[in-house]
Structures are given as C-alpha cells and as structure tokens.
Image 1 (tube, rainbow, N blue to C red):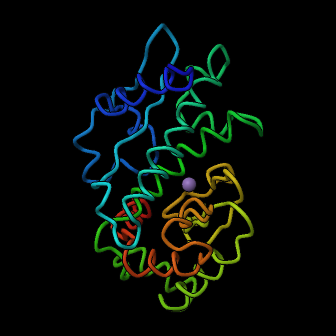
Image 2: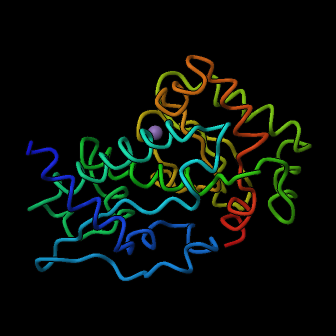
Length: 243
Ligand code: MN
C-alpha cells in the first residue's frame, strides 16, 4: 500500500461515519441537514483535532447535468478531501493542532496550513450554497439588501457574473455581508476567505478550473450561468445574512 493510500483510508472512514467537524464551519448551523449531524468536535490523542471531510448535503449526482457526478467525484472526493488530509498532516505538532478550522484561517500565516484550512472551509461552504433545482432569486431581508446595493436583483446578477468571470486565475467569488450590514461582492484568489477581512460570507462560487473543466472545459461563463440559474441555494445565503 502506498503511503498516500495509507494516510487517506482512515480519514475517508472517519468522514463517512463521524461528521462532527461540519459544526465548526460558520454559517452552516442554520442549514436543515446540519441539524442531523453531531456537533462534537473530533479529538484524539490529547489536544490533536482531526479535521474530517464534511458530508455533501445532497447525492453526488444530484446537481447533474449542471455539475456532473464525475465533477463531484473529483472536486469533492479528491480535491476537497486532499485539503483535509494535507491540513491534518501539516498541523501535527504545531500550535494549530487543537484549533478550529476558523481559528486556523484567522491565525495561520500565509502558507500551507492557511491554504489547506481555507480550502477545506471554502469548499464546504460552496457545496452548501448549492442545491438541486436551485437558482432563482432570494427573498426577505437579503433580497432587500441586494436591491439597496445594486438597484435590482438583475443588476446584482450581472455584477456577480462579471466579477466571477473576471477573477483571474484560480480563486473564489463571494457575496458577503459587511460590518455595516450592507452586502458586497468580493473576489479572492487561491485560498482566500473573506473572514480574514472581517466580512461575513453569504455565498461563494469556486472559479478554479477544477470546478468546471470536466463539464464545461474552458467555458467558465457557462458554468457561472448554470450556477446562477440552476444551483444557488438562496435559502442558505439568506440564512447566513440574517443568522
Ligand atoms: Mn475547488
């Protein structure tokens, strides 16, 4: 057995059976599926906190044809999981070993520990911001905040699509709530996360090529259209806004 497989196997088992870490992700506590998950943090060997791959809130083929099962198998099953494996390896014996995911993101310097922690958080948030038969428009206080900022939901959509299409290279495009209660669009590169700037994430889209290359090849805009029209879970974003 290769070393990589040896490391990976117990984590996959842990991810499938002991799902405590999802509770550490800010903004997910209001999601219906999260209520079924034990929130007890994973611990073993004293202060070491084992981070696990949180479960998807839907089946791996549930977002097809907009995001295929094959994309989910790679993006969730391999990319997201690898960030979890890397994070656990990197924090061993460091001051970050006993910290929650959010504390690591807020306290780690630029580098591998930050990158892998943020990528674990960002992907979990991304999965929860989508649902089968999603899309459409928000309602309630978030809809009002969006209209106040951009004039209409349609203008917000144009601005969000333009920001995500123009986010150069690999990164993330976010809808955030600012400290003053208003909303804004933020682009981050690589493993950027708005909580490091004091903003509250409401929704995000992954614009790394691995998010869309299997289904859309180089056409990021087609992926963004599918995200907006068929996938966004506005209840999730609205819950983050008011929660
Ligand atoms: Mn990704």
